[in-house]
Amino acid sequence: MLFTHDTVDALVFLAALVNTAPSRSHSDEDELTTTQQLRDLLDRYGYAGRRDGTERELQDVLALREPIRQLWTMPSEQAVVVVNRMLAEEGAVPQLVRHDGLDWHIHAVGFDAPLATRIKVEGAMSFVDVIRTEHRDRLRVCSADDCDAVLIDQSRNGSKRFCDVGNCANRMHVNAYRARKAAQA
Image 1 (cartoon, one colour):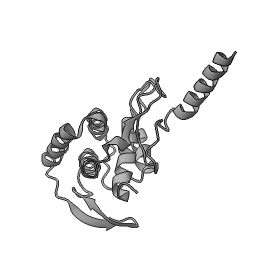
Image 2 (image 1 turned 90 degrees about the vertical axis):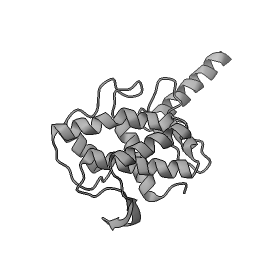
Image 3 (image 1 turned 45 degrees about the vertical axis):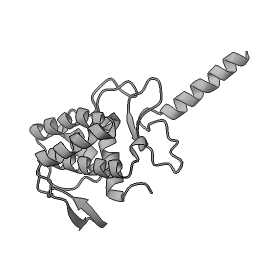
Image 4 (image 1 turned 135 degrees about the vertical axis):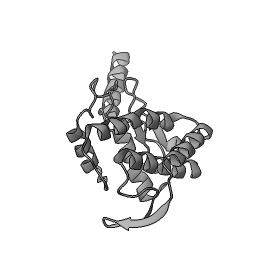
């Protein structure tokens, strides 16, 4: 296990959030345009705490997608500056907590903080772990030539290359097989 459970949970959620944006891999349409879609995404990933269910909350969360995508691929030195700024902007105060059957983990803002603030801070805290463990190479953009989804490689040997969003691994393997068959013919 490279990361703690709360870091993995945050990274998986962040990847899902980023991958709701229109992309080359799975959809040219935004998959997060309504408060119901946001509620469904939060429920799917067990996101606890305050939810206002307002259009403003949705817009605040949507505004996080691009900065998080950029964090995914920027060099560690740049990421440190961005992460520290994100934590400082929100007045993050890390504390150990237990809730919802989860063992000790870190929260740096309370459950009553606005949703976008919690996503921003929890995301920044997960990047703190990624940077400190020197496993930035485990955060990737899909290797499929027609996909730009982000992914977390949690494989033992660090070999995951394709996302789970657009069936990319299967598509690329089929394409490679067909290319080999065509070359043999």
